[in-house]
Length: 84
Image (tube, rainbow, N blue to C red; front, top):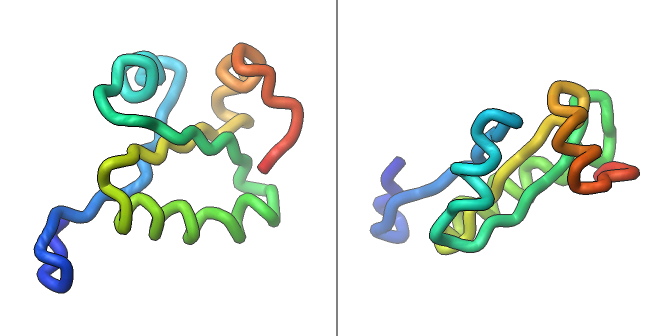
């Protein structure tokens, strides 16, 4: 995406899976913030637009999202005990 308002490329949060986690997060050349979430989680839904805007405003940081219901092995590996 391109933003003519700020004259720079816009970014979006990236959805990652067990298969893409290493490439998108571990091997990323830029800092990554990982949001572990669930579709049924009310506070997660409230936080989501904030993270999307953060990804747009701060392209130097990659925002990665992991759905804990779809990727329970990742949540377990990183000892996620609660969300958001």
